[in-house]
Amino acid sequence: MQYDDRVSFMEPSYQTSCPSRTDVTNTLKNTWFYHNLFAGKPIYRQNTANNSLKKLLKDYDMSCYKHVTFESICCVPEWESISNKILDEEVDKIMKEGTGSYRGFATFVVPNLKKTFIKRVIIETWAKNIITNAISNYSVKWLNYYYSPPDINSNGGKGYINAYNDFDYIKK
Image (cartoon, rainbow, N blue to C red; front, side, top):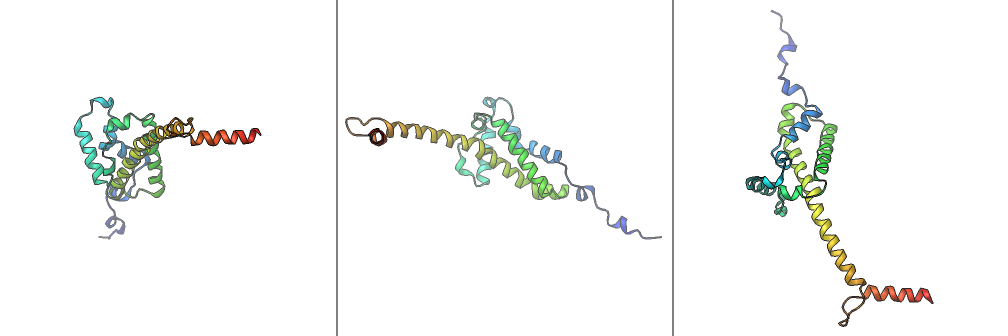
């Protein structure tokens, strides 16, 4: 009997074929985080999902985001479009780098892909919104303090006095 080299080197399809863009996208969309994020009305989510999120963030060395809940992410304007944009960007990045075989993809790529997706969604939606609101509130208070006319106790007004003196100087 003749020995065929091709037969001996045949491997299972999960080791020789690679996932498509749709497979990568569906892998992210089938994660626990994505399902809870897009679960519908955030008011009715169970506390167990938020507790699991806190544990996951602790595992990802993101325990500083201990106040993050799915509800707080969903309260951010345009959170859905931002999350879907992040998903598309991460899938594009993975497709450019290459996914490898299905087995390699599931073993080496998916854990990092999920971690990156979760981190980016939290940072680019929730954290960015919190920081923007804090800065805008602080800057309004600072501007009001700095540019308001000085009061009897001479609090504030340095910007007002500087602007007044500059205007007086230009006027002359």
